[in-house]
Length: 282
Image (cartoon, rainbow, N blue to C red):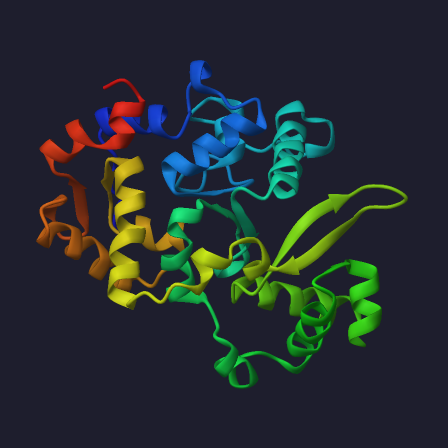
């Protein structure tokens, strides 16, 4: 088995800054969380240091080696991350859903056209690409616009809990439905709505697939500083060939350089002059 490529110390230091993996940059408020997501472009919600890419949980911890504890119910950092996630949902200024491979992900609105170009399902494709249960749930939401899980399950006729959950996951992955609020009383439930109702302008844009791949790669490389083989694919849920296409497009325009197959880093002049670097005081 090949050894895992190592990330240079200076790149880890760069990521400590951009991904808020140091105590001075730790996230503790919803405003800071929104700013973090806008700067990095997209981030996981509850992944830890064992998974690549920016993460709200790691940013809340403010340390590079953050690991989710076995008993998360009593962990203050996990609790704060969950609270911030609920506040982010309620405010609706960033996109949140289970996307590729079922990973709960935040997306800055500026990147929504590109993610939608890769994973979105158009109305004309729904009958072919969505399951019967997913279409039943979607039909109700298009009529009601927002509904709690228990009511949506009843109205859609998808009575089996597992089938209903699978239908919602399918609609989230297709960038059609998102949770709009977490309600805890009288018992915990999510409110669900159509993604286009919250982000109409961003989700109505038509973008070429190659452009989308390039811009997703740009967002990740800008916050990561350098990528190693397979890293973008794992973080963004892309196939390796498509992740490679996105990265090579950045090389072609001079935004990135390729030091070896699968290794891409910001071009030196880009690293110095990027808006992200400016926001960090570089």
